Amino acid sequence: MPLELVTLPALSDNYTYLLHDSRSGATACIDVPEAQPLLNELSKRGWTLTEIWLTHHHHDHIGGVEDLLNTYDAKVSGAKADRHRLPPLNREVADGDRFEFGGEAIDVLDVSGHTVGHIAFVASESGYAFTADSLMALGCGRLFEGTAAQMWESLQKLAALDPNTLICSGHEYTQANARFAITIDPDNPDLKARIDHINSLRERNEPTVPSKLSEEMATNPFLRADDASVQAHLDMIGAAPVDVFAEIRARKDRF
Image (cartoon, rainbow, N blue to C red; front, side, top):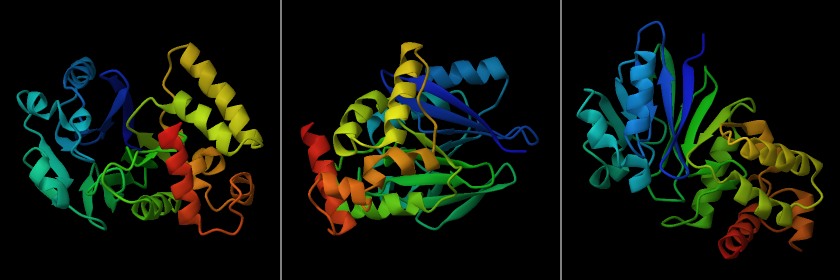
């Protein structure tokens, strides 16, 4: 039985996640923009928070940790490379590390680019990847600290996951990302259909995440830097994918 996933909106446009194992009662949250939505949901479901997993140090991903720990004695996991700017950690992890949660292996990937030290948590058996501000629905995070080469390498790690993996990203940016994506990949029928679906979801105030990796591979311009149609539209046919990615990211920054 896969681990139970709950997607919760927080702050103005963030998402946080609960991951629950019904057999053991273990419950993890992934990133804590603010505590109250998590406290409310945990209370409603009668779950006890046992773990907190942090993807990176930005305040809108860790700002509620202290408040959560005032209520729950939860183990905090985060990147060893980022420990100097994260809340105190009980478990320091790095690329390639694996730990157990709810009888399932959780793999850690370094996905630096948005920040240096950004990590993703992958629950392959259940089919979830918690990518925060690395791979996002129809986008990727702005390169505040890392380079285009770092982010491209990070995205390739995530692209290698099972296509059915649900990408649990950190923000409701999908409509804005879609408006940009169509300028890079204007003839993509899958993208056009996805934009219609996204707009329909947002009209009903429904979340657009998680998203399936296969859908991102077909429509997310930041994963399609090696696609011939994208390269042709950018007049970059035959260019190294990392250079095409850098051009796409630069255009998004100006968009």
